[in-house]
Length: 233
Ligand SMILES: *Cc1c(COP(=O)(O)O)cnc(C)c1O
Image (tube, rainbow, N blue to C red):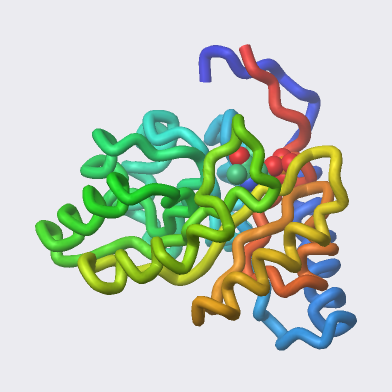
């Protein structure tokens, strides 16, 4: 991409980091009494160029995450037509007017957080005859600047979706506040998922994915620890 600065990282590094993380996940599954293979690793490739991502794809890795719709269209649209194994995850906020664009490109959407968006997605699902797998984002830290539905409003939101909409809700997602112990938030998210009969939990990033696995994560979203630091131009 135009603004990418060379970070001195070659593909060998990415692959060995990926392998290390896969091994860590496998042993943490055992350690935490989780089922083998119950944790999926999403390689978060936002801001990274296809040159940097390609080696990870060639290694057979299948889950990738982006946080901007336009960037994802440019990087993945063509590639996904040839490579049917790739599962693409939208991790960032979704504007209602982009719903049409994300259907068919993303297999998973992690950021459903409001009624109006749910309605748009439900309409689109009916039109298209399919629906991506959806996580509801929960603002576990009640942070004003952060997206996500408040924990206490979740069950009402779920009720509304179940009664009036046609959506494939599979689980919950959270991004804990940066300066708090993440476990508190991971446990809260797990509780909320249990209460609402949801099986999947999208939680844990480069700094805390092991803790997230202990708390029941089924999808961890790891960027920096695989691809190195991001440069924003
Ligand atoms: C960027 C991002 C990640 C990955 O963060 P790292 O700290 O680089 O692992 C995970 N989740 C979301 C929602 C993100 O935007």
